[in-house]
Image 1 (cartoon, rainbow, N blue to C red):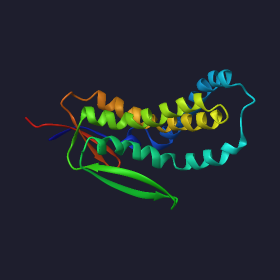
Image 2: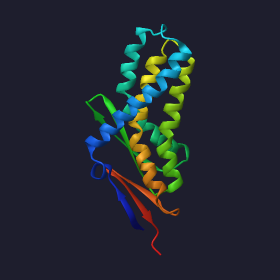
Image 3: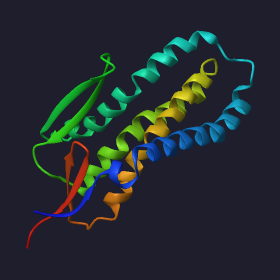
Image 4: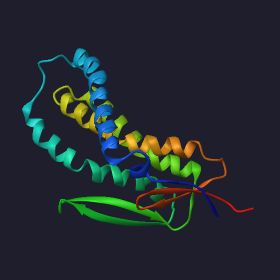
Length: 180
């Protein structure tokens, strides 16, 4: 295998710029989605009892998001090494390493799965639960901001040749091509 491109977002974008773009996307998403849901649900239905579950769920959001990347690999019976490290000694962050290189299609499924499983579920729950729609919408918009890096990775993988394989590294990933 030959390395077509090595992708490290910290080197290419920078950590402060990634954080700024993620926060900006989360805020813009909230602004765009808040208006239609407020029109649908009205403004007098917010309950403060949802604040504590909201704060707990936001604290566990990185853990949930990272596990949602691993779930499609488990469902496709791919051999995966799952590692975790604790952030602030409480919240586990999962990382995965595959035993073999994964195809371009599988890596795109892995990258889009948190967006489909968490964001779409959050939008549906925002629609269904009028009393807690504000908290669910905030959680969903924060997750969309967190997903910015996934979409950036997807953009890089889509540009790769069709027969490319992806190998995950701890600080990014490598796009590999078979040697001829």
